[in-house]
Image (cartoon, rainbow, N blue to C red; front, side, top):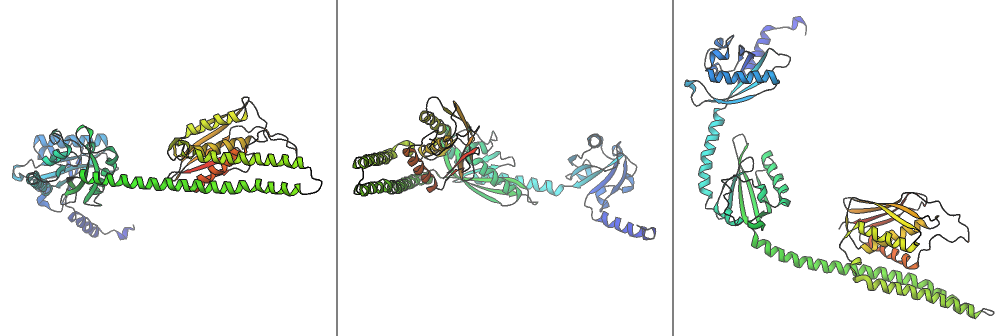
Length: 491
């Protein structure tokens, strides 16, 4: 600012305007209690001439006990460089009934003095007294209510409750006398919902809150109640108390429970019917697909038998081989239908580690005693709600397929992991160490021959998983460590 812009009169006017806007009394005080300056918009609040304060000490102006208490706050403020508050009634006889709040305030860049702000809080104290009187009247009014009534303080402790509340909980324990917190009286699964509702009341987002929840009654018996909360606020909208009403919903919930059981039984029957329908669909697809080839082969062989010069004995041998494959395939399909009632093919919670263990036990049996396939599992999600059979068969197929045209050693290790997403549980199969491939030629036989039965089982299993919203992804890159990713829907 330029010197010619300096206007003492304007600055004084701005200063006076600022002082007039202050509702509090502000003192600048040295560490020994000496008053350097004071400001207020209303000189009458100073209860003496402002000039008497200047260069005087708090020990000279105020009574000894009060001055010592203020000096302790000043010392603490300088020592800890922080503010302190003190609520007090006026120490002067001519101000009986007046209440004030004193706050020390550190001045930035000034280690010689600090500010003391004094605010008249008499209206607030009077209001609190009035509220207490009304609370006492309210307590008498709600004691005979036909619903359970509670009064909660800001810490959610029960300060008042009526006889109906004791009847609902079935207890004679004097909850009010011991200032019992309300949260432990509610079943743990509902406490978070109540806490969230109370936070909204305290934050001013809403004045009322309702929640159906279970209270813990005598001997731990759960009691369904409709809990209603409303706030008693001060003139500044601060929550003073919470009024809580409890309505016993035991009879309503019992009727609702019976209806829910009937609904669940109906839904379960519908779901099981849907499962059977999908099993029949895939069975029909497998049957129509797999029977087409042997029937067509038989037709070709029979046609060839009519060709002159055909070795009939050789054709009969081919017919027998083809029919043998057909009968084996048909036996597998019948076996699958017969197993549909097994718990392995039912929808229930299945342990992922057990599925993996059973799969690799069967893999070891299939590829021989000299070769072992060992899983290293990292199951972060422990359960899936899906038939174990389908997941196990896909794992077996994936491992055997990955070993095809590989040099078989004494041990092959795979890493299996599971994790949960928002909508599914994912099971991933990877190599730990990829064994070297065998030299493939036209006449080279694979290291492992996958049976037609397992191929059919894999086809059925994959279809069942995808038909319920899941997925099965085999990695086409045979040299990659990632082999398989199965996604099982949560619902």
